[in-house]
Image (cartoon, rainbow, N blue to C red):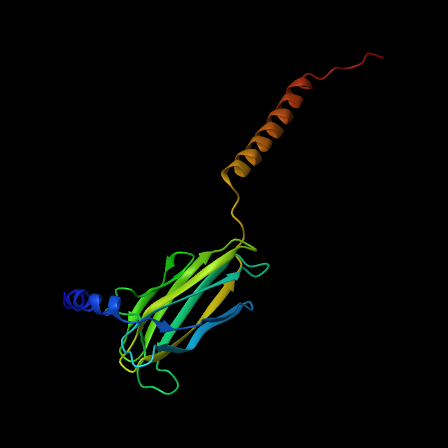
Length: 187
């Protein structure tokens, strides 16, 4: 209940705050790529500002699944951090629209994404949105873990296979009936 009250009270402040300057860096080298921003900063003289980083990447060849982890923390020159937790109505981390599970733990916050399916060679979108704290600067970093899962046959493939097995069985049974009565030649 307290989180909702604080979030509702803080929402107008976040909407009026000036945006943060942010640029996400990403490396999708399989099997584990990285992404992050070590210099999320508010505009000069502002604190508690919202930011949103968006980047795209292409699914690496041979991979069709990805899971992810993210950690926020203080910037290199600051004791403040990036918030993804209860203060941020604008806070979210998504990959292709799939929300990360966000966990606020105080000085650092964590986000995880259970493995999701990707399409080979497709463009994927990662969006990181949050709030920069009182000092006006912070950072976050994460990993993308790519995987391979065997393709599951479609129902039509299963139906075709079963139809083929049925037809083979019918032909074998028909052949057996046709040659069921032995014929003997008289010499």
